[in-house]
Length: 285
Image (tube, helix red, strand yellow):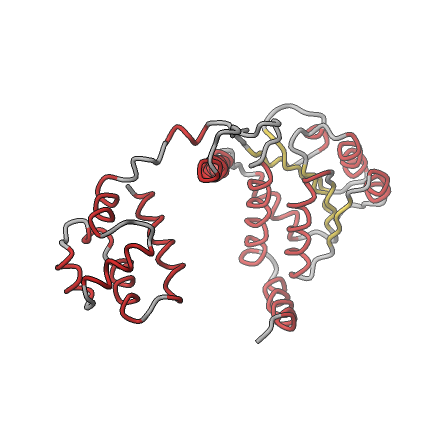
């Protein structure tokens, strides 16, 4: 039942800015009293929220239900169309877009939960290494570029020297020039991308701290990484391309970024404030 409550709360917050004043009263009351509404009649809800029964019904329809009775039924018993088994099913041609969304979202949620179960002390070691790095170099190929570019954007806001190498030759050139005090981070789900593995081998040989984000199994990559952060994924795609793996990798990088702001050097927070202020130029008043 909590899922349906959460869904309504999200929908209400989305609708609030666009609602007429009277319906906004109905919405705010519902947002704050979701549990109590289960036992209230339409008349009681109308009186408690300070708006007419007609306004309550109009608001219910904007939430995607036919009326107050259906709203109460969903809050009491959940959505009968919500199939729990759908979480682990592959996407098929006959699926509706809603079913595909369910499968993708649940897959991502489960991936994050399972990845959280694999957390180890290596996260503290990764935060310490990154916080004290002279420079940070990411090594990646293909769609692994996405979490790397996100991390580069975040780390550079803190005033850190950070690069992302996606070209096989440039990866080896960069790795060959790393030194003690530098940090090399590889993101590779399989841990078997040739140029990435070789780059980390060179980085470790040259004294850089090596960190990988990869799936939890033996691979050539982890041999050359002192700090290992593991992800767990569920594959629901027709082409066997793990659609949720990048979500876990991005969440890991976001957590490290927040760790740097809150537990790293004081100048990181100051630099974040400066860059955030500078970026306001791109916002239209």
